[in-house]
Length: 146
Image 1 (cartoon, rainbow, N blue to C red):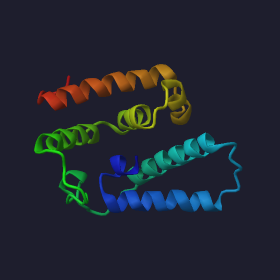
Image 2: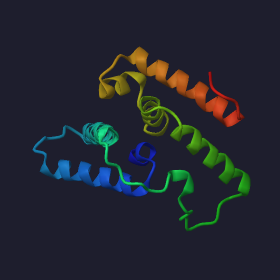
Image 3: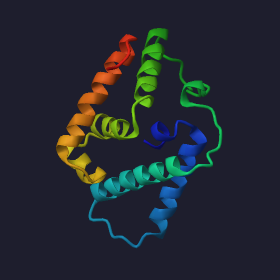
Image 4: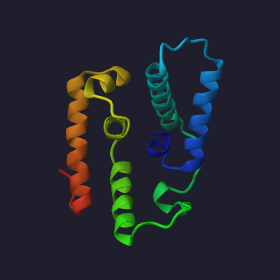
């Protein structure tokens, strides 16, 4: 999630380091693993928002320009192109939509759970997901989104 927001590996690493330092300093007692996971996601999102608000950002390579560091060879060139296009389309979404897509499709959270984390209404999250899917569809088809 940090990488999708920061769009650079060094910034994402900085965000995660800050989050884990906060975790180590925290006196909060977690009820279970889901509570810990929700806290980590919320804290990561908050740190990403803080990073975007700062005016002095380091210039780093965007995610699309990062070298391929996978150890195993890819299945085929078509898969790489498709995966790259999906990540580029996801990266082009506004932060709220990008977060909602990540939390829903990667982490498996419901709209209600995402709304609690984002401190908004579930209908807002469903709208973000709907609009994000629409924008990604247009981006992947090579059309301009409405």
